[in-house]
Image (cartoon, rainbow, N blue to C red; front, side, top):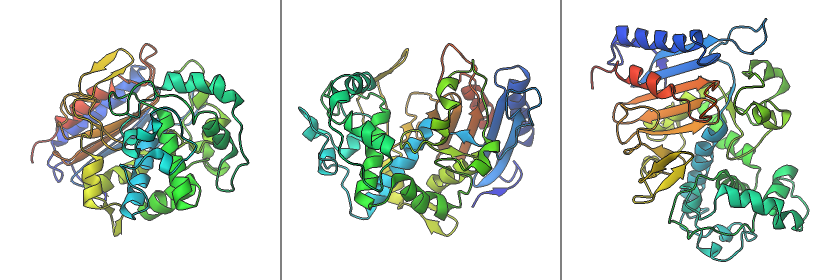
Length: 384
């Protein structure tokens, strides 16, 4: 289990870790971000867990604390992928089976060839623009059947407006990052398990891992811990809403603390265990954290990736230098909208979490200073 220790115990330079902490603090002092939580652990030893800045933009805001709740946004996808692997280990689904085997309503030309692994690696052949356009066009006229007890009414209608979205490419040809694909995976979890998606996550991940600060639908008693954005901050128009706080989205719905996310990440470094709990087998961990789409390219905003390098849920570093220049090629990570990031490097036995409120208005979702912080902290490693 994670424990507090010294940098020396973790094979890191105490002076360089101190410099990295100061570097992070200066991001707030220099108004790069108004709120920041960092968490770094190596060899299971916590060498840095600090908070800088304010909880809210109000003049009388309390200081930010390390147990503040941040919206994980797209990092939620890795939790959904873990749930899919749990079902696969129990013989309840197959990753090479058609999505339509589990969601018969998922119909359309060529969609019988879309497999679960295509959803996991964002290579289904659907793209977000087409999903959006279809839902507001032909999908808006789709008949929506009655909602089941384990379904959220919003998502029930959301799916039936989108199931028939046509493919834009053949499955497996290109990677197109797609939240809807992970929402479909969450629906598969619900249908196969027989319980709601958030209940499955709670029973199989949050509770056994002791992630007591992680939520879908954040309870009112805990909402005072949620970090707040100014109206002009990127994504504030949807992050600062009741709908987001109440979301059960399998692609973007979790609120959590840095410590809780670190527990989840450490479980991967531990080959599927944390404390006395085994969540996933070592083989599932290996499969989730390797590149399953060699030779497949991707375009994201203004960046072109000849090798998209994606595992099951995780972005695989490969040659992308994603989130830091000093990570090994075997490192895996995930961004979340507007300033949250988690990375795990099994070669260097380290995990890094960087929670911020993004202020880079030119490139939202891509905090250009997270890589700087990660480089500084990785450079503190001295012993292997």
